[in-house]
Length: 308
Ligand code: SF4
Image 1 (cartoon, protein in one colour):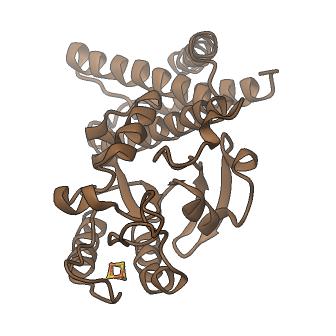
Image 2: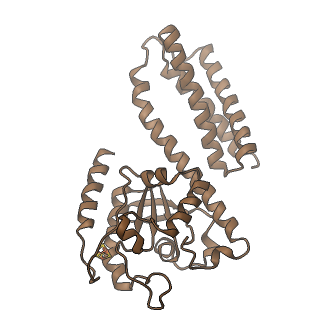
Image 3: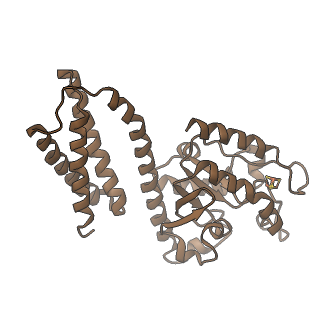
């Protein structure tokens, strides 16, 4: 993680100095501020407003985008911290000749700037990519009507490995796509998928932080087998099933998000109990937690086979 943050900082320094395109001055590459991102959002190109603020998606389109992301459970601040905001090209390409909106980057600008995005995919190896608008969606999913790809998860291979891709239409308002019947519902579905993935990423980071602390706290006198371990197995399986049912009734999200929410609840109860035991009796049992995980895992396998 630390190495990724250092490499990303170096990358941003180089990108800030890029002058490859023959744009008239001032050429200002717009940079993301996320330091240890696990997700990436890829837009088309910055607009005029972004030049003065030096922030991606700072204008009207950004307001719509961050309002959408609130539906996924992220405030603008959280989204900017946790999602690396990239783009097909990083400098304002100028106004569209028609005077309506911004010029679409040319093929040669896309080629010149494309290596920055390739490098970011290699550096960040994002679990989730959110391409925004037709140009960025085409980069990952090829040419396809928006209605066929928005509201779904896609799995793609790229320079940095493989990622889940959840596309969004461009929020600029220049396109009328969003106003066609059924299209707003597709966007809401995509935002629910993004919310589920972002919660899963947050839980994974939390677990990574907890594991070393748990290992340090292990007692040497605890046995692997015994009646207490059977109790841990069945109690956690029950908690996992109950938490899954509650999440299903209250959120109606995809099965993977429900299982994740249930797992987070079971883990919180299991770790909480061990912390309590440690305070009360001086015993923190990693073996109890292993049986908790086995109970939760078994319940998850059975729940995954039930009708959703
Ligand atoms: S658009 Fe990309 S390649 Fe062109 S100058 Fe800006 S950062 Fe460099």
